[in-house]
Each structure stands twice: as C-alpha cells, then as structure tokens.
Image (cartoon, rainbow, N blue to C red; front, side):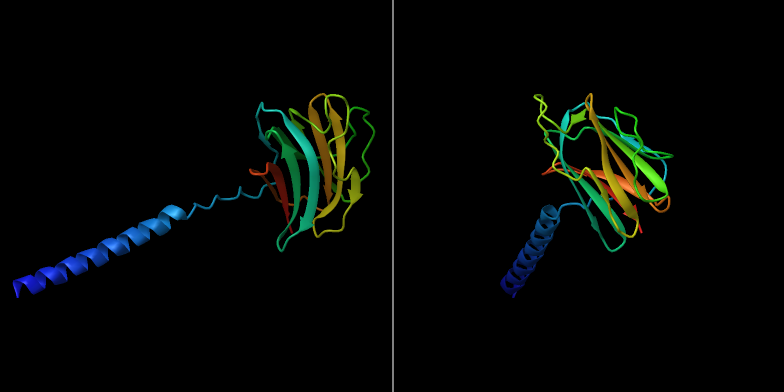
Length: 177
C-alpha cells in the first residue's frame, strides 16, 4: 500500500511540474505589449542625435483614427510636432496651402530626404489633399540643412499621438476621429 501511494504522489508531482513548465513556457514566449502613448493636443518632441534618412510617407484611415507612417532608413532621428497657425515651405518661407482649418508642423532632425550628391531619396507625396475623417492635407515642407519638415492639416484640433517602430524604422502619427 505504501508503494502504491508513493507512485500516486510521484505521478501527481510530475503532472504539477509539467503544468508549471508549460505555464512558464507560455509566459516566456509571449512578448509584453507596449502601450501606445496617450492622445494629446499639446506639442511633443523626442531628441536624438542619430542621423536618419526620410524615405517615404504613407497614410490611411483606420476605424478610430487616421494614420501617417514615415519610413526611415539608418536611424530614428529626433522630432518635434505641434499645432501651428500657418505652414511655410523651408527655406523659401512661402505659405503652404492645405485644406483644413488646423495646421500641424513636424520637424525631423538630424535627417535628410536626399543623398549627399543631392539625389532625392524621399519617394512619398510632395503635397496632397486627402479626404479622411480627420486628416485633410499633407505636404513635405522642407528638406534643408539636416531638417526634414512636414505639414499636416485637419478640420479641428484633433488629439494625436506620435510613436516610433523598429524593423523597419518608422515614425507614426495618429489623429483621433
């Protein structure tokens, strides 16, 4: 009888160990979800000295927000984004005409949308009016002295969030519907 109880206890022990290892395996292989930044209407910035190449810009409508994705090469540089009264082309200073009552300026630095020999690398839209629920217009407003700048327009001062992604490197801006 003692021998029978020992076998039962060993079997229970093995089952508990197997269950614990299985649970640990599930926990160890599940990557933690990164929280998205909070929605905001105030300026936001990130400082970084690594030089990046601005290669492209894409935009799309999602269920609860409009999204712009800026594709980067080499590194993710610093950026600053804020609502502004008017948009201007850099370095000419000429006004940027985009539909929408609210304007937003994004500067990315240190960065370029061209190679050292002047050949253009940036393949995204130069200036486009869009008809998304929040986003109305997009323009590249400058690529000068290691600063690439963009202008965006919306119909209202919509809350937005900015974050970066890796592999491939991207700067993402969402505007809440």
